[in-house]
Structures are given as C-alpha cells and as structure tokens.
Amino acid sequence: MRVSPGAGLPASDVTATEEPLEIRLGGQPFVVIMRTPGADRDLATGFLLSEQIVRAPGEISTMRYCVDDDGRDTANVLNVWLSGDAAARAQVAITGRRHVTANSACGVCGRRSIDDLMEGSRRVESDLRVTRAVVSALPDTLRAVQRTFDETGGLHAAGLFDAGGALLAMAEDVGRHNAVDKVHGAQLAAGHLPLSDRILFVSGRTSFEIVQKAVVAGVPIVASVSAPSSLAVELAREANVTLLGFVRGATFNIYSGAERVMV
Image (cartoon, rainbow, N blue to C red; front, side, top):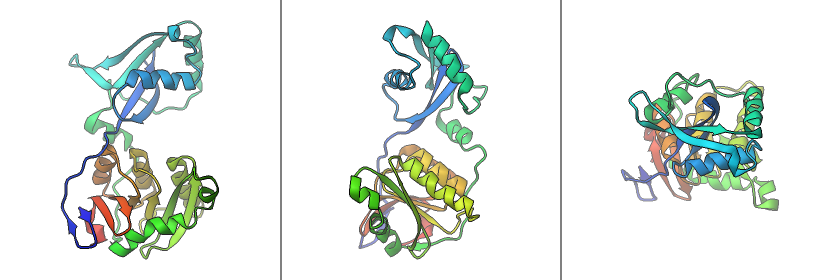
C-alpha cells in the first residue's frame, strides 16, 4: 500500500533480492552471509581474504556450488576447497567459530531458508495500531537526537517508539544491525521484552536481519527511511510484522501488516 497525503492505495513495487549464501570450507559449514545473488565466488574470496584465511590466489583450489539430491546446483551453498597453509588456517577458524548447525540438506534457499533461519522465533502477536501522522513523524524525531551523526555524518541509528510516536530509546552505530541490537539489548536488560507495543525505526534500508531481530524481540511494526529487501518483506509477512519503507514526510509504503496503520 502506497500512502500519500491523499489516500492509501494498492501499488506494485520492486525490491532488491536478498538470500542467504552458506560458505563451506572443505564441506564443513563456515558462515552464512545474507547477500544479493551474483558474483558469489568473488564474495566468498573477498570474505576469506578479510578473515585472513586466504592470502594468495593459489590457496583456493576449487570453488563450486553444492549439488542437491536431484543433481541440480544449489545456488545458495558454495563449497570452497583450500590448499597449503590456507587449509590449516581454515581448520583453526572453523574450530574456533561459533556457527549455526547446518541441516542435512545441501542448501538453505527459497522457502526453506526462512523456516531454517526463523527457527526459535515466532509470529508476532500485537494489538498495536498507529496513525499515519505518527509514522510520518518518526524520521525527524529520530534524526533530532542523532548527536554523533551530527558530528561525523557516518552512523546509522535505531529508535524505539511508543504508539503515540514518543521516542523511548535510541542507539547509533556504524552498522544498522548493531544499533538495533543495542536498543533491544537495553530493553532486555530492563525487563521490557516482548516489545509488543513498540515501533522500531531504522535510519537505513531494512534487511532480513533487521526484521528477524524485531521478531525475536516481539516488535510488531518495523519502519525505515529506505527500502526493504525481498527477504525482509517475505519474513515480515510470515512473522506477522508490519513493515514500512520509504518513510519520508507524509508518504510511505506498507509492505505487510497494513491493518496496523490507520491511513
């Protein structure tokens, strides 16, 4: 639903694709990275370089997608085989890294990826409803308290609001996900979870992780000044979360849970 000063009308929109890429080293699960598909081999190589596992091109022996039971490539699982010192460094990293246990199948793609990554979470139940005016005021209210951003221009922010649009808590960080974790962590420490009567607003785009963190904390409404990803929209619909994007003045888009917004 596209909300403007005149009315809220059904509309179509295009979102950037977001899917999980599992990188395995020698068949052993290493990390799951949320990404837009494409140039996966470059992504894996760059990630292994940044982790200081791979230090030279020759240390990557083979890289190929996992093959599913029916013989087709599973485009969201990439198996990397290393050689020489890189193989030894990889084993040390795998031993010391806390990672999510892989399932028995080869991939975590499509519908299964949401089921797997949502394990331990739940649907959000809440009677919270908000007005269009409350939603429209969120960006300016959060921006007014971003003191570190005023000094640096380089930080994201996350704010927690009540149904009337009052800012209850906020945090800044170089990463959107970190800012959300800071806000939710403080609420958990104060004994306020689940946050079933709260609105989470973030200063950047909304990815799968942002929505997943909201679901775990019980937040029914997630809004942002920018775009959601495809998987964020899908997860919000699965988890009964109201997802708002492009909140800029009197206009915004509702991607799921429109019944919680009085337009």
